[in-house]
Image (cartoon, rainbow, N blue to C red; front, side, top):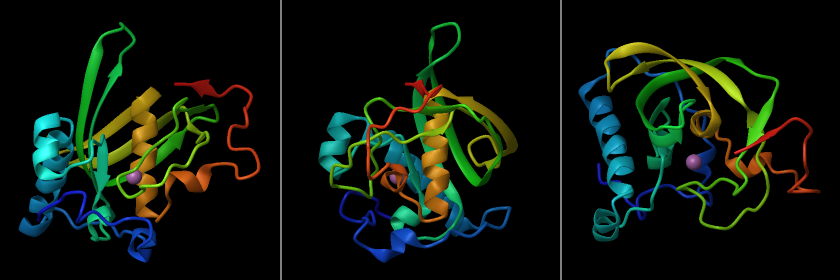
Length: 188
Ligand code: CO
């Protein structure tokens, strides 16, 4: 499948609001290829030359519904700082990821969120759980994984898993007061 900025489903298409269904494991050949294509999209999208050549918008994650396939699959490549202040890159190709626990404490990205399916600007804070535990099958490592995420990775995971229910980031913005400050929310 060719995934680029022309083929990615945008938010003016009702398909983006479709609920995604769990995927049968082991993955079919078709689902494997979809996962590889999504992973390659994210990987190549952050290389300026490739992005220009192949019409890719930079991304840290993509979910299958964004290419019109309502399956619970997402590819994520994102960097963050670990507790020793080292830069770490997280890479996942998740099938059927489920948030099994989440903190009461919230966090939000100071600069707001973006999405391959959203072209208009939507300013405002998106509050999400600061820490989550996710269980999934990871196609990259071919293992069932439990991911304990906080910081940026926790935000990215929640953004992508939201796509499975047809939820977009701006659905979470307070329409009355987009930059409302919540007590005890961590700014990232
Ligand atoms: Co998105």
